[in-house]
Amino acid sequence: MSSEENNDKHAQNRLLHFEDCAHAIDQLFLSALGNQGPSAFGEFLGFARQFNNLSVYNAMLVRIQRPGAGAVGSRRQWREIDRHVLPDAIPIVILQPFGPVRFIFEHGDTEGRPMPAQDKNPLFAEGKVGEQLYQRTKKAADNFSVEVVETDHYGNNLAGTAAGLSVCPEKLQSKSARAFRIKLNSRHDLPSRYATLAHELGHIYCGHLGQDAKGRWPDRRGLFPSLEAMELEAEAVAWLVCQRNGITTRSEEYLNQLIDEAGLQTVSMYAIYEAANRVESRTEPKKT
Image 1: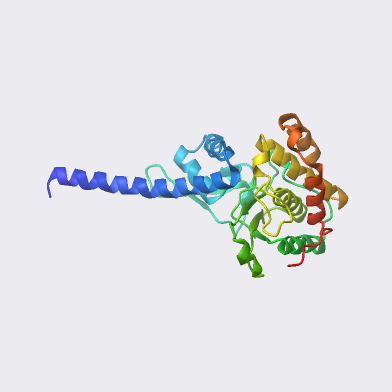
Image 2: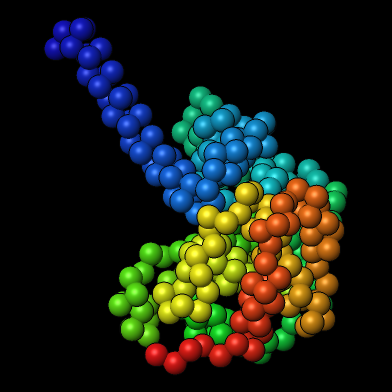
């Protein structure tokens, strides 16, 4: 094989590698775009900017493997600040300069000396949440065609997500069919998971992800001038539910910030109250 043919083959292999990587990352972005809207673009760029100690490509590898990752580092780097990696921690794989791969770990994979401002994380909540209350809320969500699952795939800075599953109304006749799915960060404690569950249910029950196939809430996605307005409604639902159940969150500070940024003309107090009722299981699902 001639030198020119070798060069052509090498170029072709590189192009195939580019196409494979582009397909994987672009599909991830399109999925995020479908769930988050235009804010996904800024979130992807911001994630890469956050990890300025890593290459942009490695930052994206962290994003793919551990959405919501906060601080990351090797075992040695964590030991240097008096934290150690948990025995069952799953490493994040990134590319190693002049080598194959390198293993790093996210803050949620470690324990030890508290990091600066760790106790100020607005995602965390405090209070006594009984397992019975948590399971009752999940069961109520199931009655409204919402699947609730826990995952250890999320980093410390991602408490949970909600998404529509595009289920056709006729398929909802099956008890196993679900129209929405909420994923909660299993690394967070029970009060924090409950507060996150209330917030994500707020998004669903307020119609931010589309209408309920059985007419229990409308599709309100096109009513909001900004994402902050939707976030305001969902956080108000979480604040109400948590306050009424003796759970302390940092929602009030967050709500004040959102009020300054959101247009209140589109905020519906009725939607907030009705969503809070559903979270608390005080609105019975309609019989089919």
